[in-house]
Image 1 (tube, helix red, strand yellow):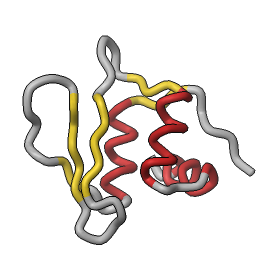
Image 2 (cartoon, helix red, strand yellow):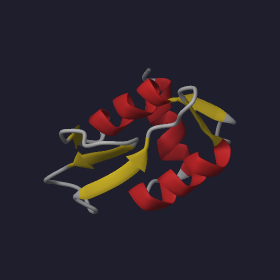
Image 3 (cartoon, rainbow, N blue to C red):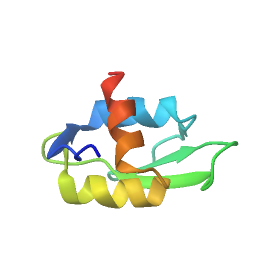
Length: 82
């Protein structure tokens, strides 16, 4: 079993979402970012872009995996592409 990294840059996380078929929706005010996928469940998912800085930390990544319904191994495999 693979381990979740302690941190991942936001841009790399967004690339992972794109690989899953999610596309960003137009940003509104603040740091909330929404992504839509017609083929995945959930279809619409929201994340807060980290600030200051651009790094998602392990606790946030674990929550994101749960929300995306991804296993740790699937997540690490997708990260390996970038």
